[in-house]
Amino acid sequence: MPVYKIAELPIRIDPVTPQTAKRLQPYLCQSEDYEFDASSSAAEIDAYIAKSRTPCLPYLAEDVLVLTKISRAVLGGYNGCFFHSSCLELDGEGYLFTALSGTGKSTHTANWRKYFGDRVTMINDDKPIIRKIHDKYYVCSTPWMGKSDIGCNMISPIKAIYVLKRGDENTASLTTPSKQIRQLMEATLLPDSRESMVRLLTLFDDLFLHVKLIELYCTPDADSARVAYEAAQG
Image (cartoon, rainbow, N blue to C red):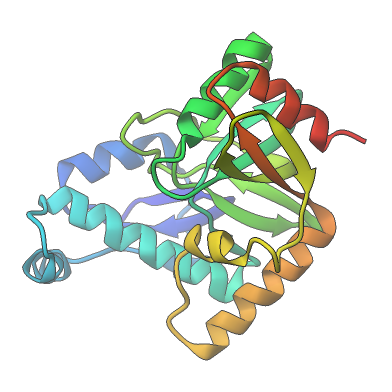
């Protein structure tokens, strides 16, 4: 059974659908050892489709099930969590942008590419994982990169996390997890137990002792990238 390196963890996954196998291919590693198994069976996929309120193709169901298993395992034992965001690397440091659906995460990261050019590398446009590795927090790409499928197999030390909001002008200021808790919780996979909730909140407390949390009001213009970047420096 193949093993894939995702978020710096060797994970055993036996893909059922060819689409999922193709998506996972860039993360294939040569290790026979693995930390956990995130495979989903054909029966699990069928059950997910049967419960879905909207039509769902098998490969999409498998994607959800596999990513959910990985996310729960990472939170449970590997100092990390799934974090719905668009993220990029600039000059060797990672920047993450989370927002309510439709706010414009992808538009904003496109502005960073326009403003900073080739200095920017897209990590993942939708579904990265955050992990603490050797006392430093990293953003880690995953095979699931959203509708645009923008990103690559890489990790980057996190410089800043932004809570993105629409504004009439571009402004950015440091904020606190307590002020942004609704959007932070909506950005991750909701814990399935009290123990997992405590673990997630403890992770957030530690994360934002090490990483800047910035509230960003922005317009669609490219100068929003400059304002956001400058807020993270110093």
